[in-house]
Length: 123
Image 1 (tube, one colour):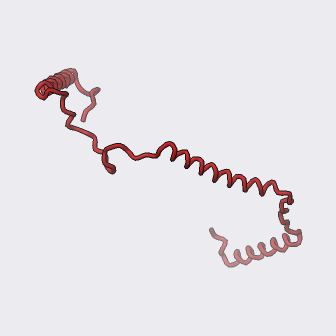
Image 2: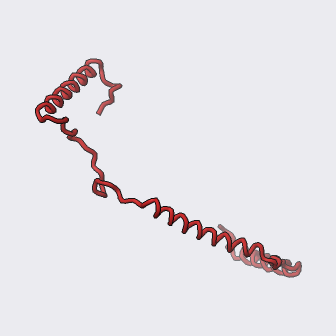
Image 3: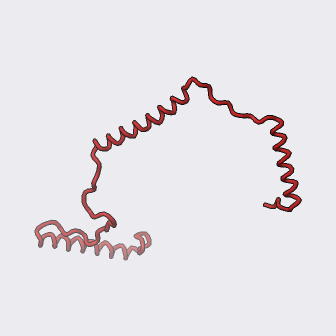
C-alpha cells in the first residue's frame, strides 16, 4: 500500500472523490434506515478474552493487599534491624597466620610446577 505522500495530485483528487461518495452513501443509508449509519465493516479483532467489561479488583481489595505487603516488609525490615542493633559485638573475620599462608603458597607453586611439567597449563 502506498502512502499519501507518494501519490500524485490526480490520485489524491481521486481518493477525495471516492471518500465523498462513501460519505454520501452513508448519509443515504442513514436516511433509509432512520438512524445512524451502520458501523464500519472493518473492526479490530481482539484475541484471547471476549469483548466486554474486564474483571477487576475493588479499591478495598487493593488496599488489603497493600496493607498486607507493607506488614510483610515491616516484619522483614524489623528482623534485620533487630540483628544489627544487638548488643553482641559482630564476629571478627578470621585471619590466616603468616605460616599458613606461606604453606599454601608453597603448595600452589608446587602444583603449578607439576602442571607445567605435564603440559597442562594451556587454557
